[in-house]
Image (cartoon, rainbow, N blue to C red; front, side):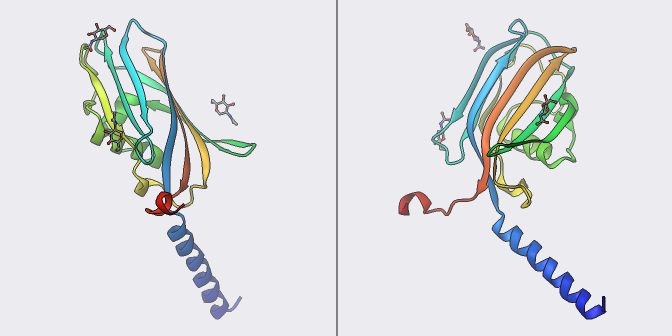
Length: 189
Ligand SMILES: *[C@@H]1O[C@H](CO)[C@@H](O)[C@H](O)[C@H]1NC(C)=O
Ligand SMILES: *[C@@H]1O[C@H](CO)[C@@H](O)[C@H](O)[C@H]1NC(C)=O
Ligand SMILES: *[C@@H]1O[C@H](CO)[C@@H](O)[C@H](O)[C@H]1NC(C)=O
């Protein structure tokens, strides 16, 4: 291939990348939340609420612990569903205590921890303290953290928590990655 053709090809590729990043602006719409408490003797006063009045859906959740907790591990699975096509986009073993204090490399975890720090009162390190009301109020995902290559799909975000290696809690959120709707979409529709 000669140099001129190569440059044309590079320009073409850059053009496509640029266009898809402009068109690809996605938002996270949340449509369902489910909290499963397997250790009611440890986790109390659990409430999970999806605010459907919010444009993209937002989460209010809270709980109280009956003991200090400094060992929280588990699996996080993000499943993408498009028609009958289902794939595990990520399946990660996590140390949730470490996540509180660190900046995550994986973009999914980074956007979740970033938003939690803004909407929740979790401490920046374990232990989580007993008899403290931990809550998040108005949790959403900021679209600027979603890479443009994320396809438009439905998703299931499934976080399993183990405390001292016992199944303790599971947080399921369903929703979709979708193109941002124009501001006046609903009015003009
Ligand atoms: C937790 O729930 C119990 C009963 O469900 C209630 O009596 C108690 O006041 C609640 N605690 C807090 C701190 O909200
Ligand atoms: C739900 O979201 C709307 C829009 O952001 C907000 O005005 C309202 O206070 C929220 N309701 C609750 C219960 O958080
Ligand atoms: C996704 O991961 C979960 C847990 O590891 C597993 O049970 C499930 O079969 C996986 N699903 C797919 C489609 O690979």
